[in-house]
Image (cartoon, rainbow, N blue to C red; front, top):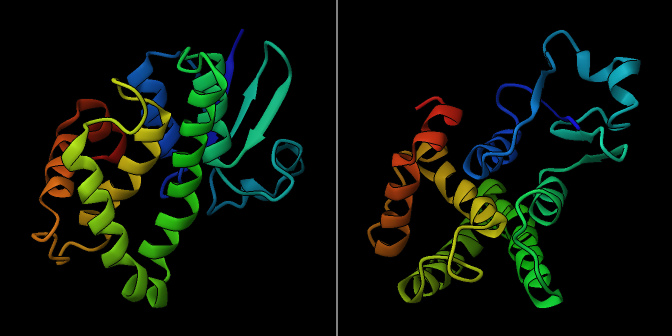
Length: 187
């Protein structure tokens, strides 16, 4: 059984790479050179017809997935043994979808950042005041998704004042000090 993770520099492949590293799941990394347009080659379009990264192929069952959130959910359920019931599955899914849609849009769409960012950050700050992990009592795919996007803040917005969100600041410090995260993000 082999997992193949397709990605390239400056893509969201860093999110599933971090998750795989944290969970000790072995895989083969397939670098797709965007500058050489390898993502548009017929062989890669069979993996992801949209030519986007990341993608995952599982040789054990032939499944091929694209979108970092779908990859995280699949790995969480099938390799990390995080999902034991429907409620856990739904909670992990909720946070992955939140990260990849609501949070990502609030961070990276300028008009939304101005309007949504303060409210989302205040709410997340309150959530992290009460608990360390989003689902259950250990780090899951939900934490990976949300923490990855929050971890992008100092990278993409180094001058962003986060002092109003001390729990987010503490989370980012823990994330940025994580050896796997540091390696994958090149810090």
